[in-house]
Amino acid sequence: MHGMQAERRVLGPAEVRWNDYVGTAAADDADAVLDRPSLYELAGVDRGRYTIVGVDLTIWEDTTTASVYAVDRVTEQVETQGDIDALGREGGEIPVVEFRLPSQAVEDFLDDAFKRISVRLVARGVREHRLVVVPQTS
Image 1 (cartoon, rainbow, N blue to C red):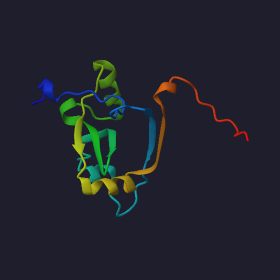
Image 2 (image 1 turned 60 degrees about the vertical axis):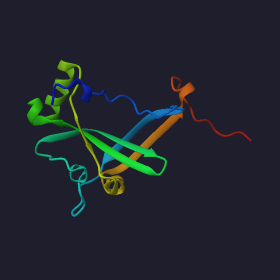
Image 3 (image 1 turned 90 degrees about the vertical axis):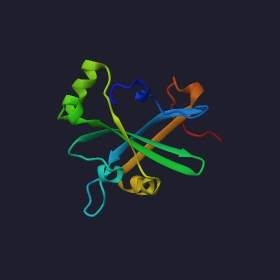
Image 4 (image 1 turned 135 degrees about the vertical axis):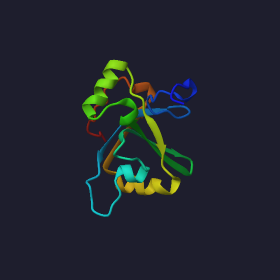
């Protein structure tokens, strides 16, 4: 199964149909809180085997979906974050497995997985330029 090329797809930048606005996002992991599920638990990912290295969140009309992407440390024969980094530097890519969150878990995922999320989108035509905030003139 691992060698089938059809299953391989590169995770590039976030994309929608027209990409009128493009940007960046950042998030802090939520603090571990007693009785609250971790990102691994919310996504049904075995922390003993996998290391989560990516998250997708898609809001499409009235449906919100989320996936996490994780390195299979057993298959890739890595243990630490440093090993994963080395795998990427040496091979030019890091193989990841996708775990889709069940739709009913997405809201909990947003509430519990991250302490803070910041998303910044800018118009596609100006994305190469630095935007500087200046005082509003009357």
